[in-house]
Image 1 (cartoon, chains in turn orange, purple):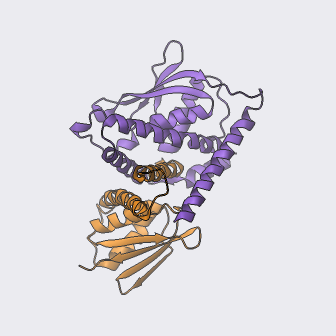
Image 2: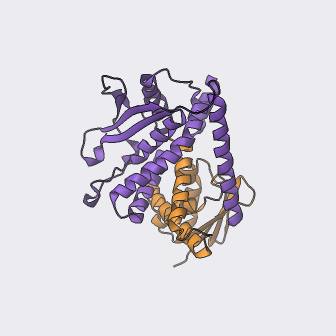
Image 3: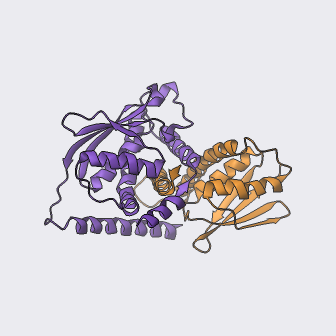
Length: 148
Length: 206
């Protein structure tokens, strides 16, 4: 078992490395560079999410539908990755899935979004995952599933 | 005191797969960002150092371990307390040099390399070099300059993973005797404030 503090420091280092790497000139970053940073972090998370879901679903039966998948993501997957369940899952006609959880990832959310997107992708759902922190300790993830 | 440390160890455990995979994603990204393995090794060490200088604070607070009497005690604390606390493994301490300033940590299984295979074109990559940086950074914060390197690595075909640590010197600080704690504390407070400031400014930028 690894320790959370170590992981958080590692995550901070990853974020700071990615930002340093993308910054071409010394001055302020423009929005394009910032977008690239987010996308690099998101892609790293994506790969991690894929790996985790592969191992997590090894012995579970296949899922009925999208809602079934989302329930699995909110319960088992979320507990495994963020150590707590999603507090509140709201869906509107199975196109938008709004989830709320209390997590301490602060502004460093891109990586987490990538993890969720990677997991969903390996379960056959193409999605866009965004997250925002509205009231400080809680964080809202929005999962929009792309209909093919 | 024991109650407190129990609580801390219980609540801070996390999924080690997430940690291992995240570390893997980092190394992969570094390999993309830099031309050669040397650069990657250097960067991993640097990142480890940054983690180490902060991690020691957490370690001292949670383990409630005081100042070590000699390097042997330090070695034991690293293997039995620190590795146990942060990675959940207990490496063995062996191969002491006659002078008692150099030893090896033998890791039977290294959690960082759980799902890892090195491709042929990365033969000089020291995959777990982050650990060296962490040890170096953490010990530097308790006035010990050490040299840390990988002597053997299971990823490169060795039977065990061996981290070789050599004591270089005790770092003396230029301040009156008996004030060591105060200065250390001040520098930590300064670091923490800087961290908070950086975070806030980043939040504001977004």
